[in-house]
Length: 271
Image (cartoon, rainbow, N blue to C red; front, side, top):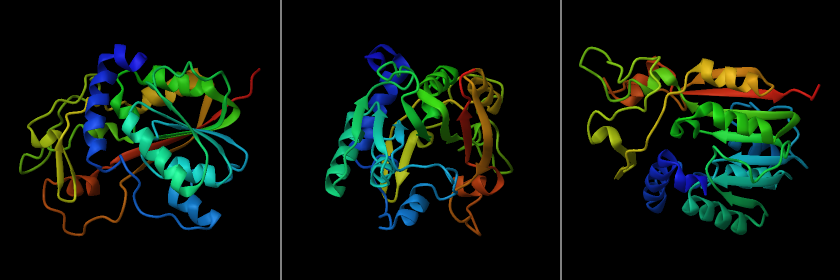
C-alpha cells in the first residue's frame, strides 16, 4: 500500500491512530444531526457550499473522511457513498456509526496521493475536508481527486489557511513571528512540545503530525490543470469569536486571520 512506502503518510498514519484511539476532535462523530433532510444538509454543510447540488442518487467520495458524521449523512440523503481514509480506526468508527444509523456505505483504506483503486470519473461529488494539510504533494492529491470526479461533478475542499498555520503558537508578546516564510514549501516546524499537543476539553495528546500550508496558487492552479474550474473560494474562522480572547491564543489569532479556506470546483465536460 502506498501509505506504507510513503514516509510522510506513514508518519501521519501513526499520529492519527494515536489521536483516534483516544477520541480526539476530528476523529469521532460530534453532535447529533437533525432528522429532516434539510436539517442534515445544514449540519453537514453549514455554509451551504453544496447548495443546488443533487445528492439523492449521486456517487459521493468522502476523501479522508473517516471518523465523522459527513459520510453517514450523505448516505442518509440517498447518495452512494464511499469513504477513503488512511486510518483503520477512523474507518471502523464510520462503519460502526453507519451500522447504528442503518445506512450502507463503502470504506476503502489508502493514501490520498494514490486513488488508483477508483476509475476515472467514478464520483459526482468529492467531499474533501481538512486533510490536504497533512500531505507534502498537494498537486498530486488534487490531480487524483479531479481524475476520479465525473465531468460536471463538484469538488469541495477545506484546509488550513496557509498564512494562519504559519503563525500558531508564535506569539512574542507584541505580535506573531511566522514559523516559515510564506513561499517556503517545507513542513511546519514545532516550536515546543505544546505546539505539537492536540487538545479537546481536558484531553491532551502529543502528536506531532507533519503539516504543510499549501498556498492558494498551488491549489487553484493544480485544479485548473486537471480541468476543474474554481467557482468558489472562502476564508473563515469557525464558530462565534471569543469577545475577550487571551492574547496570543489560537482564539485570538482566529479573530485576526482566517483559520481555514474552502475551495469549490466544477469538473469541465470532456472536449
